[in-house]
Length: 399
Image (cartoon, rainbow, N blue to C red; front, side, top):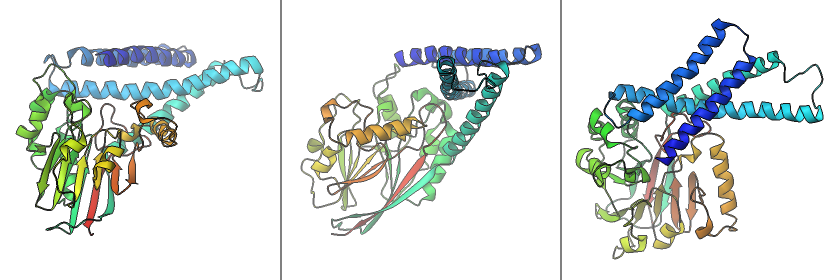
């Protein structure tokens, strides 16, 4: 709840800042300023309606979907606009002290303010349109991997991996249908969904009969899932209701700190998310398995990657990070990863948003590790500087 209240405060404060800066540059014409003010008023009304009616059943699904889209889109918009406006104010302050610009270039002039405001408005809208396009056009990341073990009945395996689908009010049934089509186009031998399959509210899944789309996922060796932190978000539902929906309604085999031997050829291990209070150690989960066979581990959050490497996993699959989702968060995550990998920060002292690999592939010992940027998103449907992706691993078993 605290996160949502913080979002409201940020929404009001940044909206007011942008409104005021735009108002200062606009001509003193009612036919311009009244529509300008109306846009901000309508947006705030929509945001608060969506916030206070979500989960109450007072509004139909279509209305909540639209309200959520407007609210999250506006949040991205005001963040980018505020940063660019703050840069302008910073230069204006420096110029006031140091006179860095010629007298003919007056940052306090109304015309200068208007030109700058309109320019960054066009820039931000253009970037967001492109980011929305990237979200709706997931990329397929295909890799060839060799596991140096014999698999009795298989020499090759085509694994299709999707993480962070976030099915719910924003990622609705139509988008899920597109995801399922894209996954099935890859002709998978096995499908692995690595956590955060559900967004927040299981009610939205029932309202849309979302299971009919997930049930279209088929593969010769099955459809498996592991839990993510969003499966453990408590919104007053029954215990594990989202996880039970995945297994009982959507037809997936959810591995919860469980190991399964598939086709007498390889092991698949599904770890519970870090949010699970009864989460087991990987060594305990893998106790007693034949490590001469290939081992694939699904683990949503990419913390403590040494655990999979030390336990003898051949392939370890992660998600959760979204690779920051949009610029500059992706750049910040990359820099924090570089700092973490210097070894200066011990594992027990790093912050939770710091990852050894925020996105992509790494081989750690004999373990192939891939951290996906995710297929869906939690919140705004924009990929700015990042990608929505499906991962296809062509695995060759060859000792």
